[in-house]
Amino acid sequence: MPEKTTPPRLEVIGVTGIPEVKPGDALGALIAAAAERQGTPLADGDALVVTQKIVSKSEGRVVDLRTVTPSPFATSWAERVDRDPRLVELVLRESRAVVRMDEARGILITETHHGFVCANSGIDTSNVPGDEMVALLPVDSDKSARGIREDIRGRAAGAEVAVVVSDTFGRAWREGHVNFAIGCAGINPIKDYKGTPDAHGMILKVTAIAVADELAAASELVTAKAIGVPVAIIRGYDYDTAPDGVGTLIRESSRDLFR
Amino acid sequence: MPEKTTPPRLEVIGVTGIPEVKPGDALGALIAAAAERQGTPLADGDALVVTQKIVSKSEGRVVDLRTVTPSPFATSWAERVDRDPRLVELVLRESRAVVRMDEARGILITETHHGFVCANSGIDTSNVPGDEMVALLPVDSDKSARGIREDIRGRAAGAEVAVVVSDTFGRAWREGHVNFAIGCAGINPIKDYKGTPDAHGMILKVTAIAVADELAAASELVTAKAIGVPVAIIRGYDYDTAPDGVGTLIRESSRDLFR
Image 1 (spheres, rainbow over the protein chains, first blue to last red):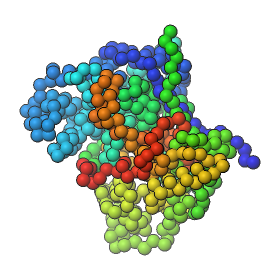
Image 2: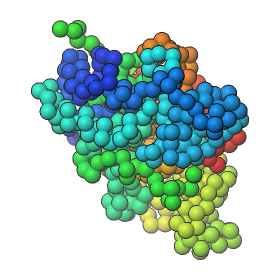
Image 3: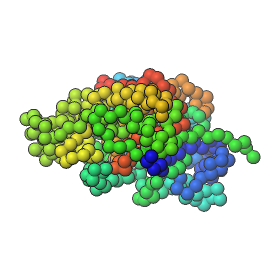
Image 4: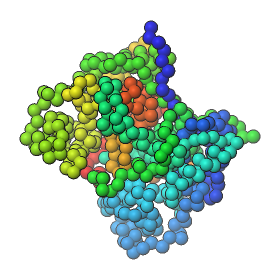
């Protein structure tokens, strides 16, 4: 009978009971309190994945479309593809480059000011109260993650955690959206196996794993849209704490074959 | 004091102690036995993520480069980018189209016969015994997943599980690889929220989530390269069992802006 081994394991726990987030709310406090209330208080070493929507709301990154005056270019494109010109205007303002404009289907893929390539600069019209309200991505999502992390560290119900801010994007070549990391603090988003021997003693070559994206993807399985679970705790994953920030996840244009 | 709620949660458990896989091995039996031995026997409703390498090995999809005669085209490209012409030959054979050839860095992005867009047709040179041995993707990775699922269902230590076969691919626009689903059985790889009301009663529009890719990504956090953990059990995730197969994850060329 072989010896019983201890398998590697982690838990993904949704955080429920976070109230509707308002501008200026301290998210770290809300998350720590909600985790405590549901019987899963935050612990040192947890990785928190926080969905973008509540981060944007706490930072006041919600815009009333009635306040937006579209440019001639936004108006022209919007008319051709039957979209809201005010939304197109915001998408353009939130981008530093247009990557693809597909007139047949009205798809606008942009590069955001952060460097993320996604549809509509990540602007989301769901889960925002009010017909005419939309949520923009945080201005600096690494800073948002740091803020949440530091807020949690300073609290009685808090702990030393990593924070990943996530959003749901489409992908090239594949159908369906998945959750990606758009900000992080206290965790190196890339794990590099370069030079590590494999199970046969060969040196691994292709080796950098985007663990922050994998944590974001894992969290979506419990935070799924529309169910009032905007945060997940990932417990038991042994991450590297530094260097953090999502910059290393973003491929430079000059190294990218798909822009 | 608010009532204590039951948070959604799932567990990701690595399966250790699977012996070196040989052609013809019944993977389902090996996985069920190893899970049992480590004290986490498979249970109805588990989703198993099985990394491609052991699937390819069990199906004899391992090739000795010394048996490969490169074509003139493979030889010419390989010489220009300083790669092994026999490996380039295999990459071309395993593809139905070349998507990008980057001479400066010797990068070859192809569309495999299954329809996956990835570097080198998913051929992997690591974790295969012998200097000159490489592993190809399974010929039909949905069929591989079905075989494992049915094998497990029929065993004493088995159960009614979903199976996702995974591989680690690069992405457009982002650095780092993540795990993707390349085959599945007993699970609908897409979860569609179309028409579901969000937390404010608005109808969700962008709504199809590639849950099989998220399960694959989650699993990589415990199966990570080179540590002898080729399978993960995901326990507690409530998936739709049908329709299965990864076909719905693959975006048709005509709908893809990045080929």
